[in-house]
Image 1 (cartoon, rainbow over the protein chains, first blue to last red):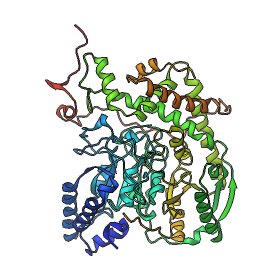
Image 2: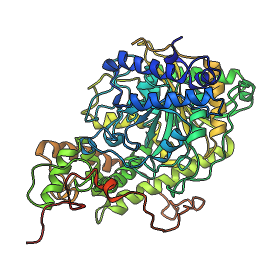
Image 3: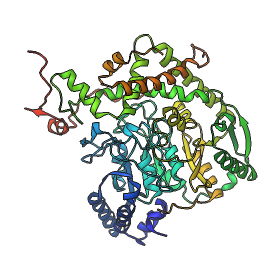
Image 4: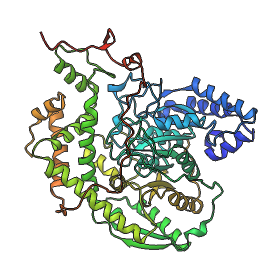
Amino acid sequence: MNLYEMSATKLSKMIKSKEISALELTNSIFSRINSVEPKIQSYVTLCEEDAIKTAKLVDEKISKGEKTSPLAGIPIGIKDNICTKNILTTCSSKMLHNFIPPYDATVIKKLKNANAVITGKLNMDEFAMGSSTETSYFKTTTNPYNTNCVPGGSSGGSAASVAAGEAIMSLGSDTGGSIRQPASYCGVVGLKPTYGSISRYGLIAFASSLDQIGPITKSVDDSALLYSIISGQDPLDATSRKVNHIDWDYNFSDISMIKGLKIAVPEEYFSDQIDDDIKEAVFNVIKMLEKNGAKISKISLPSTPHALSAYYIISSAEASSNLARYDGVHYGYRSENYSTLTEMYENTRTEGFGNEVKARIMLGTYILSSGYYDTYYKRAKLLQSKIISEFQETFKEYDVILTPTVPTPPFPIGAEINDATKMHSNDMNTVASNISGIPAISLPCCLNKDALPIGFQLMCNHFEEEKLFKIAKCCELLIGNIKLPNI
Amino acid sequence: MNIDMIHLAKLCKIKIDNKLSEKIKNDISKILKSVEDLPNFDKNESFFDPNNIMTLRDDVAKQEFTRDDILKNAPKVKAGCAVVPKEID
């Protein structure tokens, strides 16, 4: 097995035992990037020089016998909406094509303290608005399982890089499914943590009440490892909360915990819009869990079919406010064509934003304008309350909710980019956990007849990440690994 | 759906051509219609979580960045200030 195909937890042990050096691992990743990046296109910026410096530092610490973090020397890619000091951070937008942050996001500080090796900044949909990475100003990332297909989005670069071996793990962000949908499309593990469990300081805002940073990894162990390092309350993010530290047992393999586990299967997540192969694959997972003693119950979450509407109202309202700051004055792109201040604003925003971003700013501005607030925004927020209470009631009786992650397999590049309704429907099974703030994880379960990955989603109650990881690990042990892509 | 796209674009400080305006209007209308079609909810139900209390840090000014750090990203700078077109004659 090549180093780039291994999990972080395994590589961490190999580095500590000096079986391999951090420099060897970093070089292996950059050699892999050189070989597959022309096909995958997952990076906007590479940080090879700094990565090698960090890897050498880790090797030096280990040779001196110093104590190191389990993430020391592990190559990690970062979604390009997370601020990295002195490293270009573009949000894959022309608007920020030249933006070099003067500070690190809190998650980046934590990774640096752990001596993780930052490989570079990963491609995404512009300002995280999209489900295919096709709205990026720079390039379209491809799916490592079939380069004619999209990797999903908005964290498409984060998911594709891990699946293709161009990073051992990565950070993404999830506002309506942007970690889990690409993780499902690329056959990797994607966690959207509880809202507030990871600091958003330095995450360039799309919809502040829904945005959450999370790990994309090859395994559940790796997801728990990265989560345990980056989670925790941060004075720089008032919405972050105290989180119980997860002391994850990497040897955890007690699948007997499945026995008696109460699993809820909501009918609304298996609607007619869900592809038959996906339904069958997820039902097979359910059957396997039942065979191992889980108690499966069909339930109803009646407000779920409306969650997508609430999501587009709330997220667009917040986006219209958050993106008002891009005016060509303090940072980013400025049009060269203007004579007045208003003309400078208008031309900067017209030339700097792509069409998807413009559409969401306009939707958000419309619903927040006088006379429309009660009709749209307030109704969406009332629906949000309803969705939260339905989840709370469910978790009084059940341990976990199991659903398909996405309605369809990865689609061909260009197939949905001009059909907003179809593109938005990609998030139909993922948005409710953002709306309610609960944690959700997507795991791969198999490949379909076209050799494209199928994923399923597990959701637990707020701040129950440890339980979620344990259940996910049991599923992973029962299912086994899916075949790696042949690029 | 009657949306004044010219006024809306003006509010957003964005210029859009007729083709894009029509597409965006169509997409926005579909989303708005889906919200109008929602069932009626209990308007007394609070959408604020009383258990989610934000912890605000002390309102103390600190020098975290120098003026030069901040202005490094500004498109046009003169005498330590971001330059914009003149608005007053």
